Image (cartoon, rainbow, N blue to C red; front, side, top):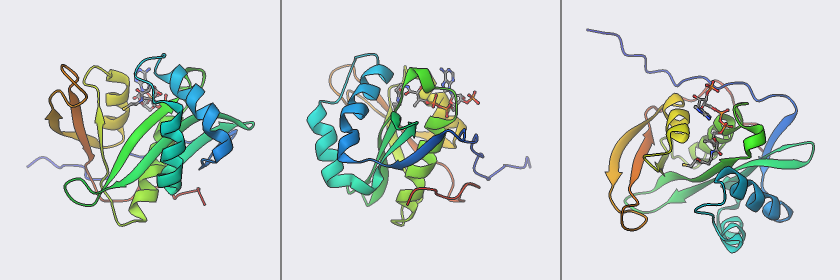
Length: 176
Ligand SMILES: CC(C)(COP(=O)(O)OP(=O)(O)OC[C@H]1O[C@@H](n2cnc3c(N)ncnc32)[C@H](O)[C@@H]1OP(=O)(O)O)[C@@H](O)C(=O)NCCC(=O)NCCS
């Protein structure tokens, strides 16, 4: 029988000029700008969503910054939908800073936050046409576990993905 590698894919290193930390209230305008740039002005969260997200999900709302400039964000939450499970709700990296491992490291830190809550295998949804995000998540060990038809409205399908494994990644959390 073929050997199946059950190890979690390792992370690209985060370049040393970048830091991942918890989001502060003062970061929210920058988070909105990163969101707008990352999603090219489409399907954006209204700014009040970020305020509410920080109010409610503070510990899982993380930013990546370089020289005090926020360049990426992720929101991880403890969901109660079908059972308590971790959700990666949103992820964006400014286009000027993509392909440097920031999205991967933000995801790993969000996973570490959720694992600290006892939720080892987060789920997320992604637009089936978003090949960039699909590649990122597949590379990190997520697999498709469902297709949610018309999830965000007529014709707005989403793929449901789940982290395949429970092993921890090699990089420990750096976020306090
Ligand atoms: C998806 C996103 C967060 C990735 O952020 P990132 O910081 O560039 O990700 P990483 O540098 O960690 O990339 C990890 C892997 O993802 C894949 N990937 C990332 N960007 C890619 C691109 N433009 N084309 C192809 N593959 C890509 C690659 O496999 C990459 O590994 P590699 O660089 O070693 O080949 C970023 O492209 C983004 O913000 N996109 C718009 C918003 C979005 O789609 N968010 C996710 C919604 S579910």
